[in-house]
Amino acid sequence: MRISIGGEQVEVPDDLGTALLAGLRGERLVEPPQASDFDALVDLVARTSRLIQHLAVFREVAMSRADAVGAYSNRSALAGAAGMSASQLGRVLEGHGLPRDRRSGGVNLVVAFRTVDDGVLHLAAEADVVDLPSFTLPFTPADRATAPTDYAGRELTFYYRPQVPIAVADLGRSAGYTLRDAEQGLIACVTEDVFDALFGDPRLDPTRPNGR
Image (cartoon, rainbow, N blue to C red):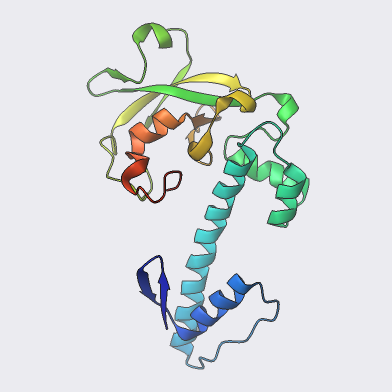
């Protein structure tokens, strides 16, 4: 079966295409696969598992972006849409650097970074970061739908403002992407400027001004 989305065509097994279409239609009844060959069924399971994993990550990113819209985003509605309890939603959002309880503070917000190999500070002046805490990580980004980054594989020192209230952090499309320093037990969100510097110009596709 060939599926066409946005002008791009993808070949998928008939069973997977049928199930995907039923899911998009919101149908409750699940039809069993028609394939009977063992290898074909194993391949179907593998393809379905990869799709589920991708959609699970996509859903979490969408949830984090919805929550980062503002201080008054409706978490009850978000939990209902995700089919989660409030505590489950809180754990997911916390994993993306967002506060489990908005009353407890804000997010660690990365506002600038330095390339360690040449010592160049990006997106800020030296005076702006002199009093900011920082952490250093190798930058190993996952594949993203933008131009290749200039910083992949390089050591970067990130400067952040601790516990910035979510209402003023203005995460926008950068919500859902976090930096994690295991040694300090730190999770930090990034500003849109930092996100764009790391991953490229988000306006590469003029038909999708807000999306990656």
